[in-house]
Image 1: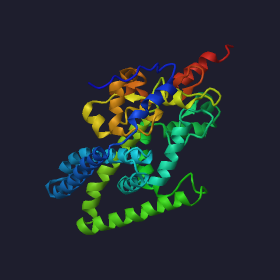
Image 2: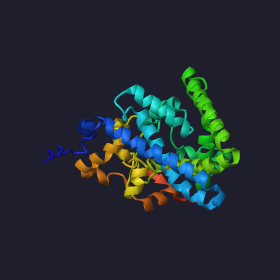
Image 3: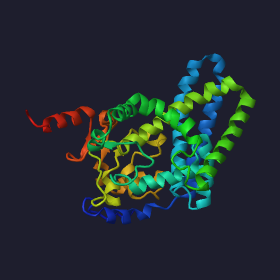
Image 4: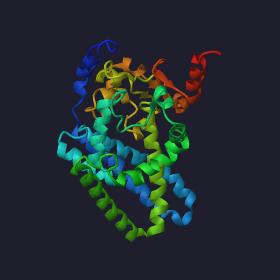
Length: 348
């Protein structure tokens, strides 16, 4: 019988909880290799099957694009683990596997790893640069913008832009240059350009093997769907009504990690395809835990299941939440922000 995990007062001692989670940080080589193989092999098989069925009509290929996109999302999550040094014990193994996957996910691995570290370090802090996340303004910041910029922000936060046009632009175009890091030294340029070169070689080879049109008919639906799923997952990890944002004086890493990140409670198959990324509050608290061990944490610390829990239905409702209200200490919609402003306006 396995020893029972110690009981932690997670409300009062998030730092103590992080120390208790240290035992889950060790990756298991065999398990990591299996996780990688059961993702890469089915993805490649589905790609070939989509190509082989093009003559039978495009609709069958589009149906197969759904699970193929799921495996591509899962590859991105493994790349994400590698960026935290949690998938293998060896940093070199993590980095080279991450770089290889980054070619498939159209992501310059080293640059993305850098920006993602900044995201973890500053998540939920209103006074620090909001790097690597969904741009979210406070109600006060939004009201202080000129009318044109308010309209642009409304457009940016529209679901069709945020989960449709935006992901396509991000992965296909934005990742081709180190946008935002142009003057940050050689690393962003080396990471981006080496990824672009490897991507160009891969695309050229595939076009030579199968032809331009077949390649685009197979790859584009997978890429577009996977990128939208990826942005959606990143969105719901921090964009929910009772998330936690603080100014620098009151902000602490541990509380922001635990209460500012959601537990996206997905059904089993979706939890597998997304490599447990929905257990995001635990991941932010201890990012060195391999994705396949996050479920062990919830098993041993069931009290964590209820912190920031977000069901699929609740996550859909969170799309309307676009501004952080510092007075109510929650995310609100444009309509709620307008209503609050009207209520506070002086009466004639």
